[in-house]
Length: 375
Length: 204
Image (tube, rainbow over all chains, first blue to last red; front, side, top):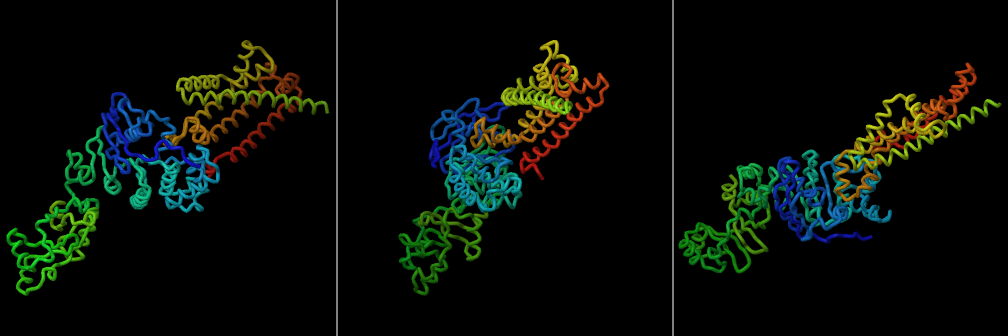
């Protein structure tokens, strides 16, 4: 049984000039936001900031007073609302499992409504439960009230995935869970997200959750969008005090496990590098002329490491080759988190590391620079 | 022997009267409630009307039917029906409306139609309440059906009134005992069915 789909993949979800008022109160005011295909966009803000209203305009649970929501360029009002919603996974904090239905019936409800037969539904439900780490044979025939909050939330996730939607809307899905369980579910969700590669709009009020999961974060306040950007953009260039308060940019060191090596590296100046074949004499010459304390030794493509002025002097007096005094450097990819990188530097007793992008040296990470930037 | 046959006939007549009225009451009230799910005005109108009928004493409801539609079986059915509307309507209404809003929201959000929301969310949630209403209405119909003998509804009520006017104890008992038996039977059997119908998650 195949699923009738409105769209196979999502390239963009665009909210343009969306305004929604309840009485005199703005729920959203002239919101413009584009969600790119394949990203996880976080909507964050205090309660009443309009994030849930914004989310619900996407699956037409709320019709805006003005403005348009479009998916892949098509206005959502062109779609039948029921069809649209069946093509968008929807998970809310209260989960909303139907209490009188077994887990298998809850997960398979939409498939049944879509006319799948019993056998196909059971097979699909099994696969889905397995995906969310619930052994099907133990959970299929139980009722929601027999499950813990975390297990129910997994079922909610499985149900949202039943129709294999390319787009998910999640409204504080982990909000009601205790912190330990939340972290665990976030990790699992992150894995599933990577495997499935879907576009996700995710509401939270927890900035740590936002940093853990989000590719980009949109900050809302008083019915308006304040800033949208990657975690680094928000931390290093907040547009307002509110943003800097929310992302806690005064204490950037708190984000040491969110920020990436790529955010903190110094670009590598090619002309300041030494060729491994260079004589110690000319290396010294170059370093003195440029006033370098140390230099990187690298060939056309391979990286050998770095040398200090001292090392070069030693090499010259002893008459040995440059590469024999070269010390190997820790290597990082630019999406390594700072905390991992610093731990590696510490364990290797180094104060700097080389950052590679696509196996090409792209920059240098200095541990003291990291500290300066974070405080 | 004659009296046994008489009792049996009166009992059947009584049951037929009471439960025709109950069935019509159910057929009238449940669609009305479903409609009022989408019309707040209709909902409040229905609730007010059935509350009003409930406030009027049963005897007065039975009596007031006579100048309006006369006497006989049909007026009796109508009188009983009016009296059983409230438990049916109120319970159905409460059952269908008192659903956790987040259940409705998530059901709509994952793509259920309005009808499917009623079918899969509201109705299952309302069964216990609707059933309690039907149970109460059935017991009420049984007792009003005794009164409607006064307006020509026949049945066990006729026997009771006859016995009362003639000081005929046998007749009085012949009328009252079946009524009591019916009431007890209803209570017992409905409790059984109620237990059987209650969803697993509501049983402890």
